[in-house]
Image (spheres, rainbow, N blue to C red):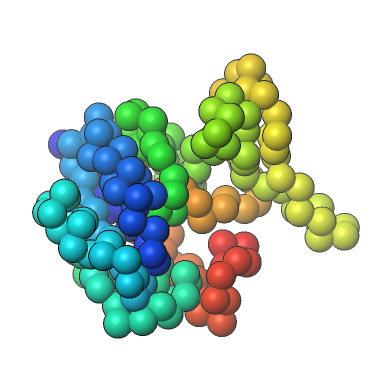
Length: 195
């Protein structure tokens, strides 16, 4: 059996994006998947529509918007109560290729030293143009360099590489790494928590 993966999606008043994202999650060619959606106090009917269209998704409805990082941690804590080997944090406006989760799990399983992996992320309106393949930090001046950003994809990033930072847009994390490192620091409301 494939390792259990829990997909965690945080949403706030993003109904159409969230429904489209969930559809791509349920279209995955990976059969040991669970989904937790944390609704961060939406007022646009998100919770009801998710329940109607995707009743298999576990929905946690927060009474107010507590910020992205605290919302992530609500989902992480719930997932860590269960026996998932991987937690896949996914922005609600992100769409997945059908083999995305399977490919990420395969890469993560290739070495015990891997704590997290990310896919190539493309711009939605330009699906051949790369948004990110991760970042590297210059140890001398701490400059962060976005790898691959704005490049047309011609296969130049087809091989897995080591990175210093993976944006929390779409990142698969090993449970063991989460237990060792801990949850993202809630001092960050939005941005920088992934670093």
